[in-house]
Image 1 (cartoon, helix red, strand yellow):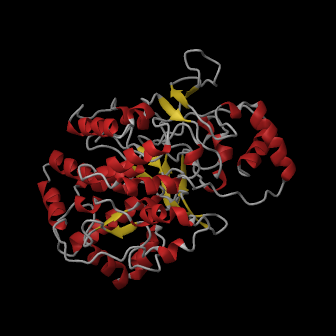
Image 2 (cartoon, helix red, strand yellow):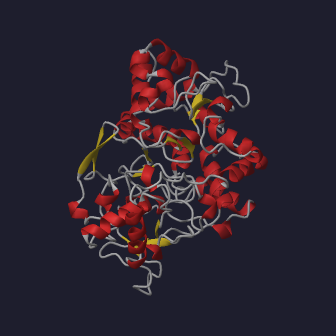
Image 3 (spheres, one colour):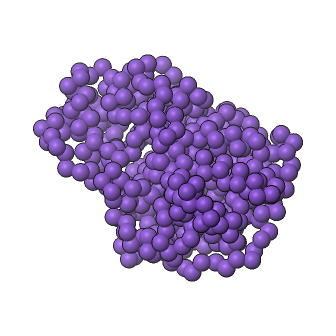
Length: 455
């Protein structure tokens, strides 16, 4: 699964990571000699006594969305909130009945439907948005797309497709495992997996492999994907259908790929998700000046107004804008490189194997090969919605836009996010790179920030 990761993403690999985690826990257990964890996970996955919830049970919550999908995309929206795609059988969570009993019996610790960890309450269910009973085995649960990608914006609106910046997935999984073991059950995660979860900050997923250092990826924005030319954080796919298909493949492998109509329903849904408009700026003059700075400082050479985008090559050392170096026509970026190294396999992994063979076969069967590029760096992100997506960079290592316009040496080494202290000295969390704009005057920086926060 490590070598698959460059493809298996819907904008930045979080779905593929979810699908790969069960295998990661098993790999960690084998490496440490802790076979009990793998055995316990298998034991969890055999209970099939529950009844599946009725189709469309998230309708009450979806009605509260500020960006409710049009009727033609209702099925894709439903799948976004409800579908586990069969991943529940991986043994990553205790049974549904155990989870429900936890929050009902001790709401002070867990909150209603685990809201203490940042989940949104689903008024039509006893489990929260983003954590649902399985499609194949309804006695079990798994996270769905909506867990990481439904947000309550700063102005109070609930918006599908925006990142859940304060969802503490790692802390939740550690607490859940501890409660399961305390109740007298066998561990289903190894010590290494627990340590990995414990180190994961809110609003991000640790997508590292069994034997690699932690590589963090902040929850990405799923909006405006239909307007972009290079999708996922590495820019390796160049159309939305390819991203959705490869993401679902990575999530469900080795289960049968979902029916084409289901996959295309998700494609259609993501094709209508736009970023939320920022509140009206209080200083329109500053925004106008900032728009000029955005042009004159050549920010627009990478972050184009029409949302078309390219991938800047990853290269240590002084960064270059497009046109500065014929060898790197799209420019270079020197941000944290562990994610790219992890994706292209240079940081480790077991080499090509059955998983890669299955992926390549799937790509050929579904006419995807021509729409996938090998990654050489990081994509120039869509800047719309920046007002509600802090912290910044692909690993969430810079807390504010003013900090991003500083030289890396002057950015905060630590900061607090959702009660968790982010430490940029940790592997995968470096705040270096993207020093474009750091030499602007203070007044130009202030105007540029005003403009960016208005998008």
